[in-house]
Length: 442
Image 1 (cartoon, rainbow, N blue to C red):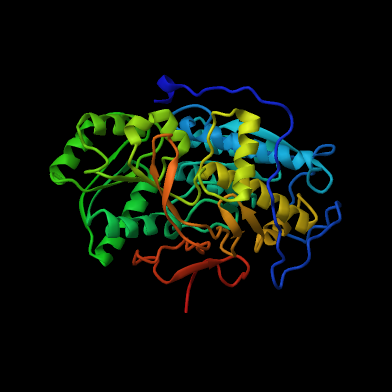
Image 2: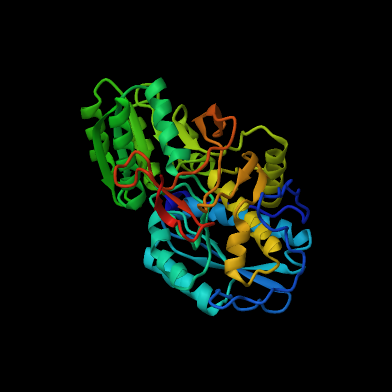
């Protein structure tokens, strides 16, 4: 658990960090990037954030720095701060430095909303980078929409949402959950036990998985949940053994430090990765280190990015992070997605020619492209989600992942799930006011 494990603190080495190669590509039909540092006049009804104080543009960072989710979210803050530092060293945005106001959501959803209101109403930030769990995102969503403000959300999630006021830089289900289920059916068996934390993401994800397995000939032999942060996992492990006496797939959507207890007790029960392979969607390199590689070796995770991705942009990203935070640190998918979010916002602001006119920034974000650590051509689509590579990794001895599956190109996001009958046939397009967040495709 986070309270028992703690999180190592590292010295910052030097002041120089390696930059990442960020490539902005023109998007057909969109205006050229604005170069004037002076904000244009805002049209009537367009939201205008308060002007930044002095020469700094204030942005918010809102993550859990304490509580059960701190095991995952502290490192996301590190990645966001790395991007801000790199941008500031390169001259800032529109000639101004970025100043981050950081708040602790404390793994508590009402606290997240209180801090979101503070950042928007008191601190007058122009955008917020934040949240991890869908429960925290859902808690702040109404606040961002009521203020017509802007949140950049960096974590894979269950979909079934497409807000004008949120940019989602993690995976939609068709970029993580669905391809991982396909891979498991082809490589590990057809019987699945679903285990998750008891909140919106795992329950919605499992609804999608059950619909997908039904369509593809798989079988759900059990499904169970524990409270977020709960460590009483023995009853679930007993149920898994009873439902899968000869072994089978465990699809794991536990979040936070519940995973520590789960994997330690799973191994203690003699249920090894060879016989009971698990596929996790919230365990990455940071969590493997915290839980202990001896408990996770051989198990699988589905993400869009792993530290072991082999390309020059990723090599620079990993080197820059380690130079700033310590050679023993690792990077993971939500950290990469959070890092990218800052750069996508920067590019949108520069194209809009203003950080204050949020409607202009939102429209300028559409079609932005970054050659990212996960691969080239990552694009902000018109549904406010990124096209992303899909990867599956297996935990190895050094607590990193061997990539056992990867797409050759980015996969376009589908926020409205096409396996679930209630949302099949629906899409999202914020470039067209007649379509918006949910419309029926023809």
